[in-house]
Length: 356
Image (tube, rainbow, N blue to C red; front, side, top):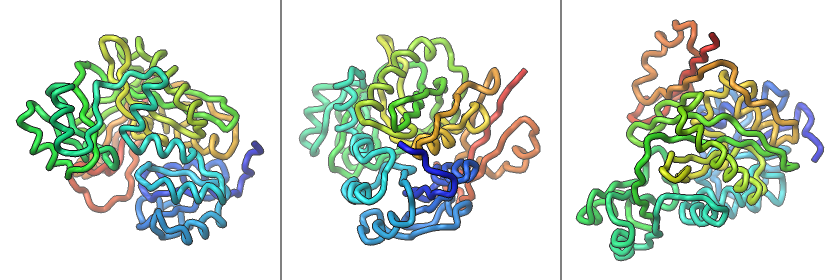
């Protein structure tokens, strides 16, 4: 494809912090950004052009399409059919196919299994009666997850024994779900891959991720030896997923370090929290490379800029210490402009790069 020239407009579905950072990266490359969302958010602070509309409003989306040259999205919890209709009017990258697979845990797991991926033992759960059968097949402990709209620990419930089934079913609100068996692991990591329209791709070194209460707390590079030992196999799977979907842009796959190799957890067809370290810690950030990919530019190098990189999320009241963070000369602070510090809400992050 011919690269979009500077001055072209990137449409961003979603007004959150990922959209904010995509818009910043776009501006640095000379592109304009136009946010489409039902409400304002962090992206609006850096992107003055905004269309307010529901994600299933075909008329508003058609107007939006006429104002932009390419569309991307910052999260996958949007209905695929309206985005498919949008793609008939303007290029949408990543594709609707990537969106459809990643937003449904059943479709996601089945798709990855066809490509040789190894998820934790799982069963689809259509209703309360099906849950009992899934528990009998997988055993406990296990975790029940909604098939859609779950993130940062939301839409999930743990079962220590079969007696927890009723409480878990109520906790997720009923409805379609998957039951996943627990797998023993010592480390979590992610593979961030960027794929261009011509199929060329680059990958980032895998960060070692630590979660607290289901929310990413830290990402550290280089990852410890157990992660490094499974890097090649996990990255190969990510490449097969990207090629099979004809994915364009950043694709993220999360893994556990398993006894027999990497255990696939989930995927996100977009820039990802575990890649925020790359803004200062890589030669080209995930956000810039995402913009490069969707606009048809050559992809940038992904080598580390220091011997060690650490990213820490600021959750809820953690951001109240922003003055201390700013005063630290070795720390790069990113605040998202959110004014209400609710428990579990990502308010920002900081990154430290050690170069000596």
